Image (cartoon, rainbow, N blue to C red; front, side, top):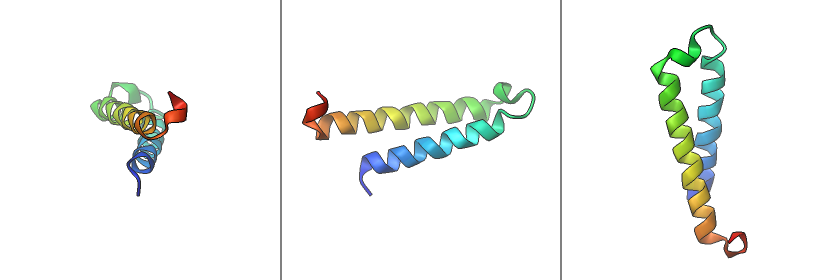
Amino acid sequence: MAPSSHSAVMARLTLSAVGRATEAPGGWSRPEVHQALLVSGLSVLTQAVWLLRHDPDLV
């Protein structure tokens, strides 16, 4: 699996988990939600960097 594909899957899974966790009242105050958002953001950043380095048409 290419690095960008792995990052995309991780980002989708993380955002899905965050969506479920924040449905409950007080969900945004849970530390796990904050950690999941950080992981998701890093996954998106990783995928963006990979795409920029491997697809010269994007630059």
